Image (cartoon, rainbow, N blue to C red; front, top):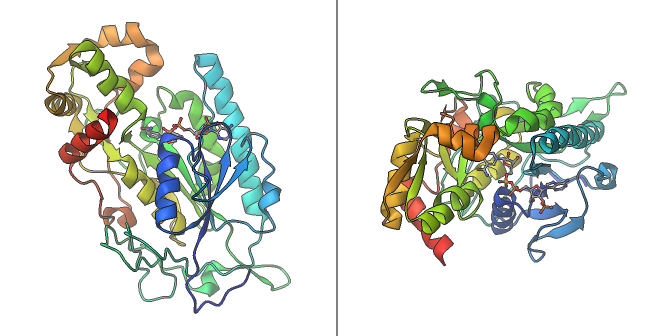
Length: 372
Ligand SMILES: NC(=O)c1ccc[n+]([C@@H]2O[C@H](COP(=O)([O-])OP(=O)(O)OC[C@H]3O[C@@H](n4cnc5c(N)ncnc54)[C@H](OP(=O)(O)O)[C@@H]3O)[C@@H](O)[C@H]2O)c1
């Protein structure tokens, strides 16, 4: 589909993992932004009133079925997982195979549509990305303007964004990809700030799952990759680890469990901001590479527990680190006790205006939502 560069065009986004904790928010927020949405659903529920849902498994999905009308972007929040260590090892390899096949397809297709003006038309809006003085602009017209992402480089005029074939035919950039990864890939970093350029020392679940991101990691640093690896810290919301390890256990035990000394640092982001940032990266036609998604300054685990406990009206009780390891085993214990102060040096993200800047207020809202 070729559209005139003088008209903003509504982006089409394909969501992987739309039934999951993070993917559900991407799906919901994308619909609010009036993005044209498609999801690949394996088992879980996906709200079919918000977009087109295709039944399938990413391990066997035939990507070429999208070649006739490739989406502008894919937001990939699907993770093939396992419960035991051997299952996770296999899951990492299955994820690698699935993602290699996605990446092969993505780099093989040539778009013929003009993506110079992806436009989110009905935004309450999280972001506006100003690409200096050229045309390639994600425009959020009704923005309360949570964000303005100024791209560092200005590669966006058609002459630079379009590649050239041997015959001189101009091809458009491929379907953009935003892949959800986690800050566990940086490992336990104590109090040393972690930036996008920090070395990878995967721990806990990421020892196995990092394999799945390898097909993207290889490409992410190439300027024409149209690929963003989003490194997410602890994502809080009404589900996932926060419900499991803090709220349900606290309601059951009558206290909030502090895992270990409480000195370890936690970087957190609200799930709506995680989704909002990924959506922004998906529609920013010049963003590429690794992006740490940060929801605010890191807090100590002890302070986090005290905050949750205050909201619940319960005390905090420490579970000594040795007990954490014997109760949960190495993988979960590492995840519960690792220390990470995630920061970003990407200008685009530093100017994103958070929807949930106050951890205190947002934790209160999330607990209220969980209690409903
Ligand atoms: N939650 C966090 O705090 C956090 C923090 C940092 C990074 N992350 C990263 O963010 C990503 C999403 O996390 P999440 O918490 O949203 O996970 P989640 O709730 O477990 O969701 C995983 C999603 O992947 C889908 N999926 C799994 N295997 C699939 C397959 N073979 N084909 C198609 N879809 C498949 C699941 O679909 P089904 O409904 O079929 O199971 C589900 O929608 C993960 O990569 C995770 O590492 C999460």
